[in-house]
Amino acid sequence: MADWATVEQALLQKEKELLEQEGVVTSENHLDGYRYTPVTNVKNKETWEVIPVPASKPTCSSADWKHTDVLFEIGQGIAYITLNRPDSNNALNETISQGLQDATYELHQRRDVRIVVLRAEGKMFCAGGDPKAFSDAVAMTDKDDRKAA
Image (cartoon, rainbow, N blue to C red; front, side, top):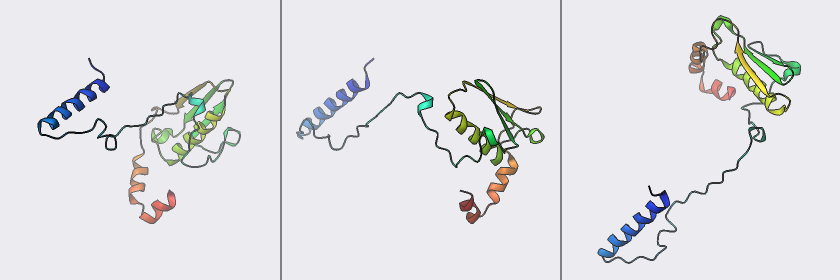
């Protein structure tokens, strides 16, 4: 099987032959300014070298944890994040999202934590998105939506 560069070269040669049959002579580099050549700069980075960009500033840390819908505990080398809305089957809403974001932001900064356990209270781990939160978002006016962003 040929690699992509070989296929591309064969296509260029065929195009040149067809153009010559029609009486059109082109220079060797006639498509240089028109052909898209992607510039890919791939850097191998470890996950701890990539800084997370939160959607908002963290509202608290493990030292002064304020979220009640997400519990956050750190032990020796291990952290526990617990979804804590058992009455709604731990459905994801804004408060859970903010709690998860605060926890992951802090965990990214800590080199002493090597294991993170994600668990939940109640009968169900997570029901997915909270339908009430979706209906509230749909009901927002444009002014409210811009204010929330």
